[in-house]
Image (tube, rainbow, N blue to C red; front, side, top):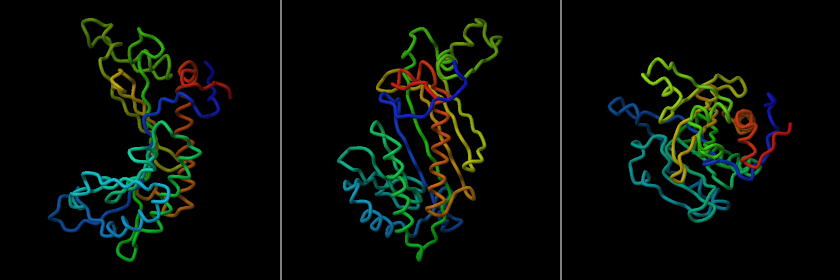
Length: 273
C-alpha cells in the first residue's frame, strides 16, 4: 500500500453519518448560587428573532426542540431551535444558549457545506445584540462521523484486524491477560479516542474509533474532528474563514490517509494522487 495520500475527492458511496460544524460563545454566570454548569445568554431571545429573519430565506422550516421550553439558564450549550431547508429534511442550522451548529448528512458536499456554515456564522455575528452582551466566541469545532459495516470487506475480520487491514491503525493488548491468548485480538466492543495538538489551526485534532450500529448493522464508528477553544478561537468572520479551511484540510487529510486502499474503493473513491 502506498504511503502517499490520495487527492481528496467526492465519494458517491461515502460512509458519512453526519457532518457537524459548531460554534460556541461565552455565557454569563448569574450568581455563585447557581450550579457552575448553568449560564445566562442575555442576548439570546433577541438573537433568535433576528437570526431567523436572516436565515429563513435558505432555511424556512423552523422547529422548536424540547429544550426550548426549559429556562435558558438550565440549558447551556444545548440547541433549542432548528431551521431546516425542507420539513424534516437536511441540511439544517441549529441555535441554542451559547451555541450555533450547522449539520448535514447524506447530501453533504464541502462545496455547498462551507458556504452554508460561513453564512450562518456571518448572520450570527451580524445579529447578536452586543449592546446587551458582548459576543466572545469560546469554541469552534468541525466534526465528521462515519460508520463502516465491519463485515463490509471480510466476514471473518474482528474489529482490531479490520482497523489494521483497512484503516492502517494497529491496536494490540497483552495476550497474557487471558487464559486463552487469542482473546486479546477479539474484543467484543471498542472505544478509543486520540487527541493531537495542531498548529494549523491552533487547537486539537481528534481521531476516535468505537463499535456501534448503523441501521442495526454492526459497524465501526469513525470520527475525525478539529476543536479550538478560548484564545485559539478566531473572533472575526475573515479569521473564522481561515479556521474553517484549515480545519477541513486536517479532516480531509486524515480521512483519505486512513481509508486509502481497498476501503476507499468501497466508497466509490480512487487511490490516485
